[in-house]
Figure 1: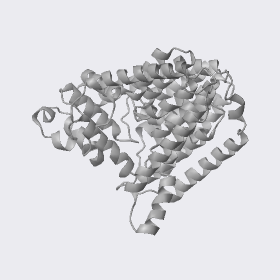
Figure 2: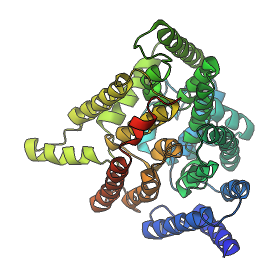
Figure 3: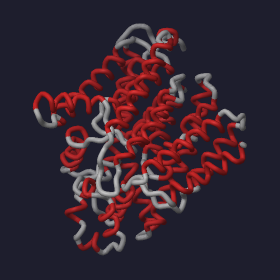
Figure 4: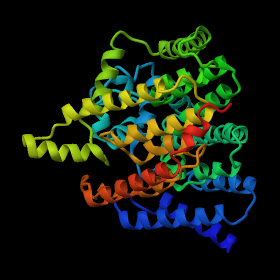
Length: 449
């Protein structure tokens, strides 16, 4: 039965990677659900941890020579790598404006990249941070105008990042006395295999550096942790929201705002900030902040996909005003998230490592529940954090989030709000249940060493 399950999983991933189109939703979701069930069976089968970790990488290698089908973002990744290789700053040039320039037009791959990246990407500036740009550049330098080679090199970078992620995550699980087998909640999860290894989204690299930062933070090696944190932000900007949460963790006394706490926090933030400035200096231009922030602002005030509370607010706004109030709600919801971050950062004078990770998980969850756009690969961040806790609602979400692929039709995008409602109702219900079930957990561990 175990061998049959492994072979069936290999077959499922092969079909998704090589035979399936994104618009075939019910077949996609059925295969994804089967992969989920088989992965849970293997987790519970008693197979040795090392074998299952190796098996997870075998599944990822199935996609090595496949072109991603579930997302077209990788065309923009390669496009940015091409611009960097040509000496053009991807933060300063819209693809739609530069596609006919002599340098870009001379690249034989550029028409395919431009046509397939989609109009949304083609008409917005790149926001991918410096480490992402570095890897995109390296892969293009190695692969040149060969699409498949670009994809293969990107995939190999991702596999190396996941190896590092496994290494540091296992160390963290051991340090905090949790079963190391919990690494499988992430590394064998079909969401991670399909969205990171197959579709090449950069969360895996970001999570490697976040895992490194957390491990050295636990080991009280502040400077190395700060460098890892900066690298995580320079891969994806999202970890920045965790910076205030470190303030009570770095307090080793019961008194709030004591001198050692402030100095340690300043060291951490200073090293992180200087590292980020150095990383961005290679692509710096006086117009960078304006153009980068302009595109980031669109994420909050224009883009909509698979949202939860925002869609409820949008419906209320339509009843009240008769039009889509995303411009208002897109500004209010991040402020609520910021208020939650500050509340958790100042709620306790001192917290331990477990409470820090719990707070990070709560903030990441709240951030996406309040977001206007939640693509499936976004939630790999809270999924990663959840494996260091007893909470399992992220496993349910990592399954149900694939319902969002029902929006992709042969012609255009049309969301099914019943399926979105089902997804979030189930996730929030389980999250509240687990929260009530473990409500004494925070008070028990808050001040433990």
